[in-house]
Image 1 (cartoon, rainbow, N blue to C red):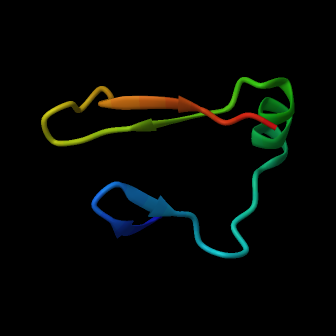
Image 2: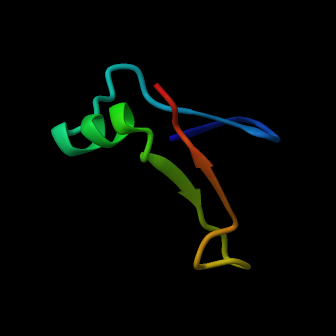
Length: 50
């Protein structure tokens, strides 16, 4: 991922899900968990919906 501003990130063009990630995405169970130095176990989590 690349930072595109104070509150934005982008995924590289051509990035692809693995078969397992795509199945999780289709099932509504794929998520992003952002970690930081202050919150090593995860600072924020967001569901990715189809």
